[in-house]
Structures are given as C-alpha cells and as structure tokens.
Amino acid sequence: MDRKALIDNLHKQLLRWNTEIDKLELKAQQASGEAKRDLDNTVADMKQRKEEAKTRVAELQHASDSAWEEIKNGADEAFDSLKRAFESAKSKF
Image (tube, rainbow, N blue to C red; front, side):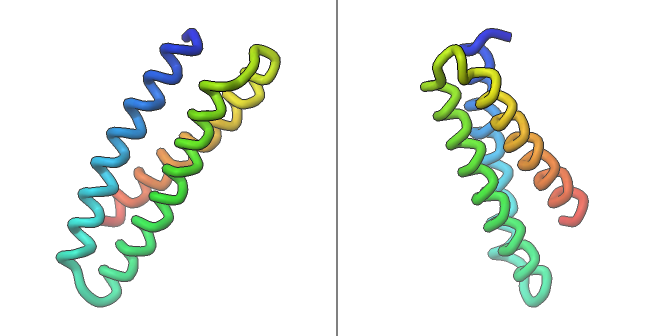
C-alpha cells in the first residue's frame, strides 16, 4: 500500500472510532454507579489512544522518505493498541 492510500485508510479508521467512542459515551450517560465509572474510564482511555493515533497519522503525512518506515511502525502500534481497546470495550459493554 502506498503512502497516500495508507494515510487515507487510517483517517477513515479514526472516523469509525470516533463513532464508536460516541456510542460508548451515550451508554455512559445512560448508565449509573460502577458501570458508569467503568464506561467513563474506558471512553477517556480510548480518546487518549485515538489522539495518539491521530498524532501518528500527522507524523506519517509529514515524514521524510528515510523516516517513513519507522514512523509507519509507530503508527501501526498505536492503531493496534486502539483496536484492542475497542475490542475489549465491546466485549465488556
């Protein structure tokens, strides 16, 4: 996959994750007690991970050819971490 296609795909994934975070926030608003605290913590964690992934995409966009592969690996790690967090949240809530 070339640079532009990869960056476009990562942007699309970020948009899908925004929607998922919005859904969890809605569940948190409707929950109470321990469930609300758990959801609030999960949402906060996911927002932080999403921002890290977003930063990696920005780095990819501006990376030189020599730095591309290293930054791409960091972006892959950030997206994998966020994906695991979403899968964990879906299984719990």
